[in-house]
Image (cartoon, rainbow, N blue to C red; front, side):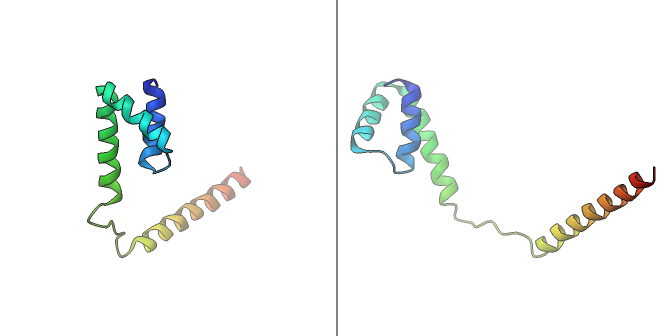
Length: 88
């Protein structure tokens, strides 16, 4: 197995989608390739940190109002530009 194939299997392994045979092949490769082992450990750490974040991210209270105001402003600018272009 080369490092490219190992990279593909790393992602499958982290998603829990590898067969026993693929997992064994990946583990054998990781024992022989320190670069891939380091890469796999970093991937695991990144995925674990992002999936199991302890503090949930919350939108501000007025988030919907802010978004809708921006949409209305964009629509208003579009209407004005359309009318100006129509009269030129």
